[in-house]
Structures are given as structure tokens and as C-alpha cells.
Length: 450
Ligand code: UD1
Ligand code: MG
Image 1: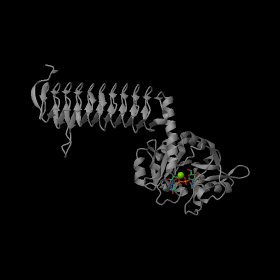
Image 2: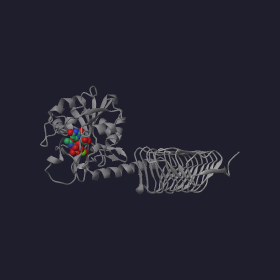
Image 3: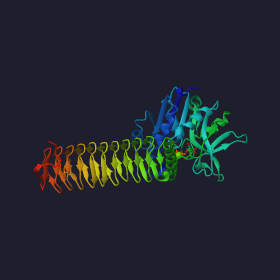
Image 4: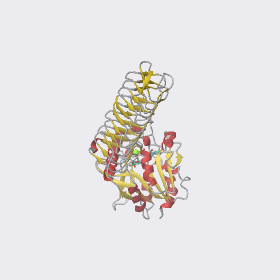
């Protein structure tokens, strides 16, 4: 069978009552990525002809979260169970000879298991993933006959037997589509008023064509139905992500205290010291050292840069930059190559040219700073007048003296100097020196170039 005629269904319509959350369960994140997106990513590696996601509870939110995933959304108007959810997809998957069905709350299922499910079906009407676990909890239990053939699945709500280790249904299935669509309508309603997809196991057995169980690991079978399972999934996913980066040439000195989202990209020879969080769309180039104690969210970090005990959000940092300790680079900052940002330097929505120095407790907000400008201690761009924000421009080679207040909109010209403690309310011409409150031009800057 070719994979070209495979259709995949991801079940994502449930609310997830046991999460006790307004957010649909499948949108809870594991290592920064919603659970549903993890499973869609794994499914995509089967290169299916069609990939349908069933939505119901919080439909708009789920569809928004997966809008770039190239999937077909199928609505399940009433949450009548997993068999009902699959049935809604028959039209969307018309022409697919194989139908893979995946629960949306099993983020640790990788493409390997899905391939094994497809290959392991053989001539059976369907295969499903199962494994032996110490504590089946709320998972469906797999029943076998005297010859070891699977003959049913009993859902936890209906199970009345003894406790202890048991084989459980992991929640991934691969069907012959002809068989699936012919028999789905025969699934009876349960005591809970739902149509259980798992009832098809008994049905196949009764027809003399039992399904086959394909073995998986307890972690792959981890269905995240509450916050305890969410934390378990997070721990395992984090371990896998760290392992992947370490094998790809990243030094992680303390994996126990290093948190990297699934979406982060790291080059070879990056070093991550303890207590760091690398989140979102962060991309780090080679020979960078992060940490200890840094948080990077949606940050791009250029080659050779060092970030020590600092926070960087939605910003681009050039090559060979020194940041921290205790700097905060907020959204929309572009920090040029070889810049130095020291203690309590805060930069927001600003661009800094090459080699700008900003060593001690200063704030640059809505500013454009030319190359090699010197931002001395305690400088503040007064960018907000209580109503709107205004820009500050600081020319190349300017020397902004300690404790200068730059009342925006204002420009300090190229090579200009401001005196310590000055309050600059009017533009300072290039090469001029301005001092006082409010600042007045008193001559040429010491370093002005003629
Ligand atoms: C289900 C299986 C159980 C298995 C377990 C593995 C059934 C009846 N039971 O139980 O045998 O051990 O998964 O994790 O299938 N969903 C819909 N529409 C619905 C109901 C659910 O789309 O009407 C979705 C949910 O969003 C979820 C998935 O289907 O992603 C599974 O539903 P869930 O309620 O988590 O089922 P479990 O009780 O975990
Ligand atoms: Mg579940």
C-alpha cells in the first residue's frame, strides 16, 4: 500500500473536563507547542493525502492555533464520542484507502509509532497501539481471548474488574477505510450516551476478523487528561528536546534546569549554562553562550554573542554582542554587532548600530542609535508624554553623558555630546555640546570630528 492514499484524522473536539480549564484540552502546551500541533506534526510525517482535525469545544481557538498547519477542519457539532467524531470525517477523507485516527491528547506519539501502525495492520481491518502499564488509570483496557487475539476494549468508566497492571489502548488506530465506513454506524451508544470508537475492537472480533494490537511504550500511551499527565508529558518532551540538541552539538551544562521549547533552533557549539529558558521562535547561532539564568523568547542571537543573566524578548541580537548581567531587551529591539549592554540596561523598540556601549542602568525606548555611540550611566529616553510615544534619534559616535534625560521627540546629532544631568528637550546639532536643564548648546563636543 502506498502512503499516498492515507488520510489522517486528529480528534480534537473534546473539552477535557478533567483539565479543569476554559482552554480546550488539546491547546494546552507541552514545551511551548499545543498538544494538537505536536500530534499534527507527527501525522504530517506520514505524508498523508488528507489530514483532518475534528473540532468542537473551543472550535475557533483550536482552528486559530492550527491555521497554518494545512489541515482540513471538520466540525463535530455535539460531543457524542470518538466514533461519532471519526464519522464526521467520512466525506473529507473520501478516496483514502487507509485512515489513521489519532487522539489529540497524546503529544508523545512520534512518527515511528504511526509508521508501525500502518505497516503492522497487514490484512486485519485495523491496527491500534497498546501497551502494558502498571496502573491503567482511566485508559481503556484491552481484552484478549484464550488464543491471545484482541477481542475488546473496556473503557475505564465501565470497568469493574480487578486493579493492577493491564494492557491499555494508547489511542492511535490505522483502518482499512472500506471496513471503517461500513462498520462505524454499528457502534452502539454507551451508558454515558457516547459512541466509543474502541467498540470496533469487539465488533471486528465478532465478525471473525480481529484487529491487531501494535506495541508501544507507556509514554506514547500517555493521554493527557489532567494537569498531572500534562506535567509528565512536559518532562518527557523536555528530555527528548535536550537530547536532540546535545546530540546536535549543543553543550547543556545542567539539563535539569534547562527549558527549551520544541520550536527553538540552536546551531552547533552553542553553550547553555544552568537555569535558562529558551522559548518560542528563538534561534541561536554558533559559538553563543547563554546563561546562567537567562530567558529568551522569540529572540534571534548572532554568532559569538554572550547573554548572561538577562531577559531577551522578540528581538534580534547581532554578532559578538555582550549582554548582561541583568539586562532586559524587550520587544522590537535590533542590537547591532559588537554592542555591549550591561547591568540594568533596558531596550525596547529600538535599533542600536554596531558597537554601541550601554553599560549601566539606562533605558532606550523607541530610539535609533547610530554606531559606536556611547550611552553612559542612567540615561533615559523619555519616550512617553502621557498620551503618545515619540522617537529619539542618537547619531553615530555621539556621547550621551550620565543621567541625561532625552525628552522625545528629540535628536542628538552625530558626534554630539550631552553633559551629565542634562535634560535635552531640543535637538542637539551634530558635533555640538549641550548641557543643563533644559540643555543649551555651549560649544563643540570634545570628540567632534571636523
Ligand atoms: C480514549 C479511549 C481509550 C484510550 C485513551 C487513550 C475512547 C472511547 N476511549 O479515552 O480507550 O485508552 O483514549 O488516551 O476512544 N474527542 C472528540 N470528540 C468526542 C470525544 C473526544 O474529538 O466526542 C477527542 C478528544 O478531544 C481527545 C480524544 O478524542 O483528543 C480522546 O478523547 P478523551 O476524552 O481524551 O478519551 P479518553 O477518555 O482519554
Ligand atoms: Mg484522553
